[in-house]
Length: 580
Ligand code: ATP
Ligand code: MG
Image (cartoon, rainbow, N blue to C red; front, side, top):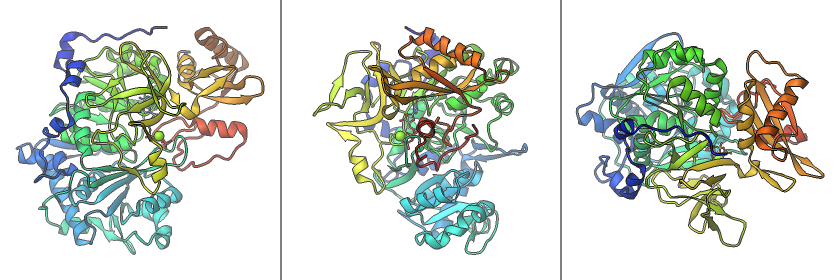
């Protein structure tokens, strides 16, 4: 079925950063893109491009970061102030013997100190790795071990609860900086910052010097430690501009937790290199609060994730209508497939759709997107960015074959060579090598491309369901169920079956006002059968209050399956909500 297309009017498309996608692709080169940035004495340092560059150019007085505290506090840092604080932090590191190539971790919520630490660490030439503040001791320990963490920035509360007990088993961890005072075996960051100089010459890192370490979300298994280099900033900058339509002076809000790659690439680096004012909200999701922020801060560009969007849908359209979102120009989503229903809903509610885009921790930045200038096909991830060649490939034979016929499913693959591509999986060379074949990087996701060049997500290759000779992507089934007014969230898996191979089973969380019942179960199955046909529709539907999700908001289908089959749960270090 050809879905409805949301057309973009030509006049507003002209104003976007990329008025013509095809022309932009034809004339694009990464070397030229690098010329948009300063470079630093022939090197490249992310922090210089994010902050120093703008101060030198006379924009020091512009607000870089506006922090909104849980209880209504509002703290602003101009570009000049952020630079001064980052310089202090870099001096603190240097004074404490942490320097080039050392690994600095954060275990902090969304606090200004986190942003200062990221930039200061990069300025000092050290490698930064964010951790989710909600992690327990075990995931913290394993990530510090894998990355060889030399320093951690955290609060005394988090330190006592989660890190103190691990110190003896982490010989490489030389320094712990507490943001709120002194503690035994720890440094008082506040006092050190006060005593430190505001001047620091940003280290001239080379483009290939390691800059960031990110752990994948752990949706499909044990998280991998992904290494990115300073040259990644070229991709952060360009993709922020082209795929998120960031313009200097914009007010921009990325809701991603800074413990996750989106929170760094698009929650810190891309917005700063594009000289926008970033909103950072300390609080957790609450639709009233979020709408209040969008309105009061006059947010122009908003980047969020499908889980949050589904929660907004759950709250309905009326709360949207009760606000003035006239400043809002562009909304985008990442992290999971965005159901067509969510795109259509947002278009109706906000007068503009959420623009889905696709990327991975490994790719470091957005690869495929619905641009401001492009007609949106709800349910599609969009088209590859300038500088990115994406393909659908068949990996079943001896040599990999690119599938060029439209509408054919295969593995989503990319031609390596963009700046933010991972340089390695730490200590997992074999796993890293397996990602590359015959000149392609294999994403592990299944997708197809239509005749207009739009890419459509089908599912993770491991989540594909084989039922009575049909190959069924969970996303298609989930999206059909999402159309039903009772459904708030859904995860679909294949359950082994003697005759069919696998049977499609759906786990459904309901919207407020709906209660699980046999009648509703039958109604949902009937709805899915009508939409998908009997071969693809679920044979069984189970109701859950909530679905298991990672801290980056991804439904953990492998966990639904392990539980269904009574198998071990595997690595659940990133599991967040899991009330059944
Ligand atoms: P792990 O690799 O540890 O199992 P993960 O793949 O979820 O976890 P991330 O790198 O955070 O870790 O997520 C990237 C994945 O998220 C993609 O490979 C894809 O499966 C999914 N994803 C991200 N954005 C989209 C999107 N717009 N549409 C569909 N899927 C998406
Ligand atoms: Mg992955």
